[in-house]
Length: 277
Image 1 (tube, rainbow, N blue to C red):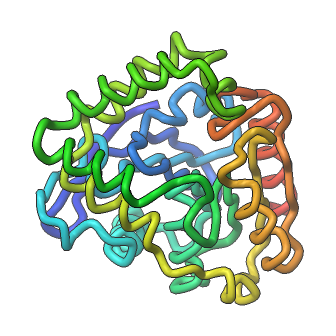
Image 2: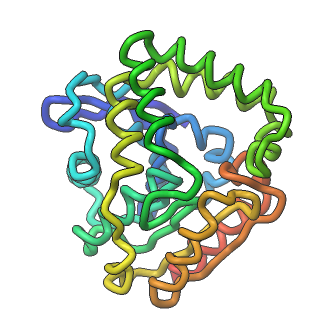
């Protein structure tokens, strides 16, 4: 695996890549994510061909703009289109995790010819359950005033002190030794303005549930069995996308690629075997 810089007009991003033959498989991380979210899984999937995991706008080593108006879903859709153009990718197999799945949904609706197949992972066509605007507005204000390092410490301390975690949180605790160091990387490399703007963008997004019938490419819907905030959204995706294959991953919450990597890798392999015949 190598990491390289990619220029998209007046900004740059970093991208993890495993070179290979055949159609590109592009994986999009979620909100507060990082291109390294899939780092442990990429070598295991190296035989599948060309793999690409770019940082999203405002995340990782993306050129930070510090301007609220640049952190909207429509701009991230434009970024992904520019990325595929720069890479010379006519159509890719596309996986989107969480907020990255919300981006993938909007991308395939706007540019269906650029997506050969779709994996929607722990995501939703509408705002997820269990989150409130007040919480994210407060966290965004802290990020702007005190920085992402301060916010990360507060989030980690609160999670570790929670004596009644959700089922998804309990899954995370099983790999906490690996989770929290990566959580620090994710948060501290993110633009605080992006955090404040995109969290509210996620909560205030217009639903695309009514447009799911427009998606014609082969689609798999993956979700951890304990990811309660995204089960209803996964149900909607399965019901709304014709022929969608649903895979509920056991013993996993919001990060099935880390919580149950064997089952996650098997689901990804089965999807690509089905669509690359």
